[in-house]
Image 1 (tube, helix red, strand yellow):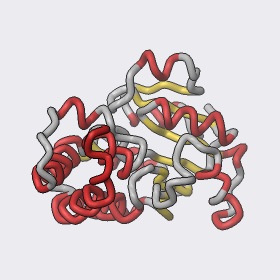
Image 2: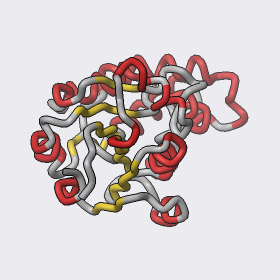
Image 3: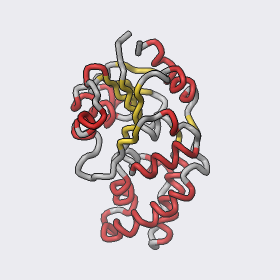
Length: 214
């Protein structure tokens, strides 16, 4: 076990299964823009690198000029439907309760507003001291700046910090930032993408963090 006082949690694929609501919002935006809808698995493969990138990839190269309008339509719709079908993954509430004395943060490439709405909607926003979101396109995971910017303000000790996420981008953030990393296998990430990065810990159930963090 390792002494960790600060835990950074990813959102999509780690805390919540939000695929349906993201796909629905994206296809709504595409329809409004007169672009063919995309299959769920394709849109899901674009999740994780920020809202603008999600919209850009979903639109495709031919419709790149519609990106800004697409972001607005997607955002307006998603804000109203963020938790229509989104569910918390098993044992998430239990582990957040278990670590009630740890300082916990959300670290996501979502816009902070979207993370706030979703976490409030599923009833777990109260567990997190702050949301470090992807509002600045120049400072997104896996860049070290997402953690480094927060250090002075939040008074965080890197040596006692860990990021918990489901994708290679989360593990790479941990490596780049010099903090411990834990990969949850049940989310959107693929083993072959994560394996080469050698996360410090791997869990199949988020409840297993009990056996890692003291």
